[in-house]
Amino acid sequence: MAEKKTRKERKEIGNSCVMCKKPLKRVKRYYRDGSYYCNNNCYTKKVEEDAKAKQEAAA
Image (cartoon, rainbow, N blue to C red; front, side, top):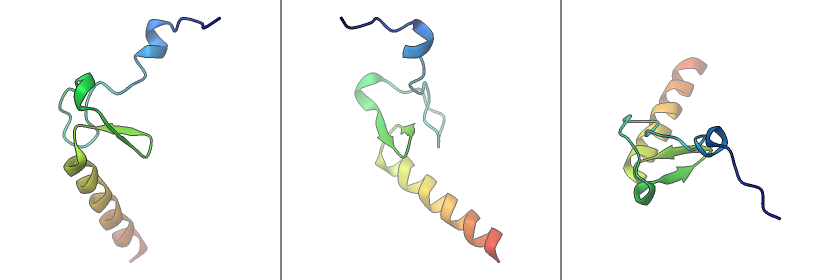
């Protein structure tokens, strides 16, 4: 039998975009690398930001 998830387990899905902090709607979720974004643009900005921070830390 399938077990029902509790509210806390269901709420683990991000409520807002990691990059821009906009609230996410079910239809507009974009999941990459363990995080939820509002669209591909926010995801690519986050990747570029992380790469830039990594380069600065290495220098």
